[in-house]
View 1 (cartoon, rainbow, N blue to C red):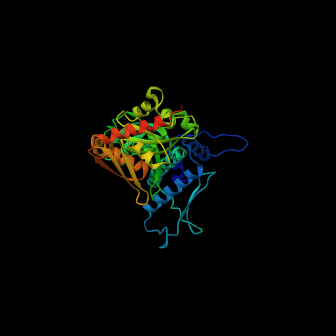
View 2 (view 1 turned 135 degrees about the vertical axis):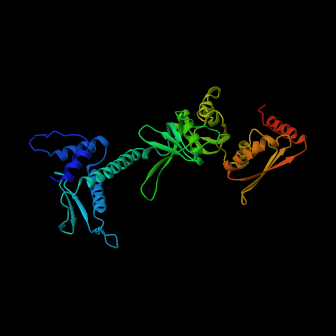
View 3 (view 1 turned 135 degrees about the horizontal axis):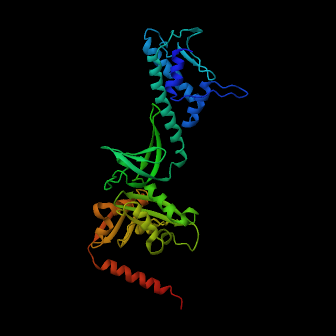
Length: 365
């Protein structure tokens, strides 16, 4: 057997394999190849393809004068590796052009490329296991960070949290553990895949509530929409599909335990408003602007705008710090919301009196 084949089998595979005598005698090459494939969880064909690519790369390096492809990119030189024996040949058409004693340097180059290809195949295999988990929550440990990205140990694979998926007031110290929303598996044109994790995506909150609220898991309560300013405030609109079930109460939980658990997973910094969804946009928007008390709501459906009148004293609550409350309410209702301040201090009082009178009118005798 040539130096190339011997070196590939011993130096690359990295272990000795005893001959196995059974009804059919398997070659040392086949045993070693199957062991590598099974240990790394990859297909034998992937190992063979990696070997072929490696040997061709080594051949091109050793013999740059030989054209291996034409101007159209068609292969002029191919590498054949026998799966049963490991016999390797370099063919140009039907002609065997394998150089005598192809050389230890070529074998070492082949080994390096093979190791790289196998690592890529392993990573591809592992990443494919996470495809079914896209759109769910996964726990991970921070292992390092750079200027833009945070890198997370997910157990079998490494995830990445890009800058725009981070919460600005979280530190992400090494070895700290967080729950992340597995947003996507992004593949570049070159075939390189990355597992994209998020701490800022609104769906993280939706998934956290699914974990904590059984009524959501069994579809008694549905999440209509989630909007958030990560690290500051979020609003979640919920609706009950079953009469007698309070969707807001179900999400808040006894003594606020359920919503508190979700808040704690967000480092306790993000305030979450749970709002009952309503088909009536005026009622829905009024609830979305809580805790502010609203005097009146005027909605233009064609322009998708809403003029909301509040007492001057309620304006700061309606707008929120930095406009976060009104902006989230606007995002939740898909309306452009304008807050109009009424300086009359009697407006809210008059509204309360009117509401009280209406309730008294419908009281049964």
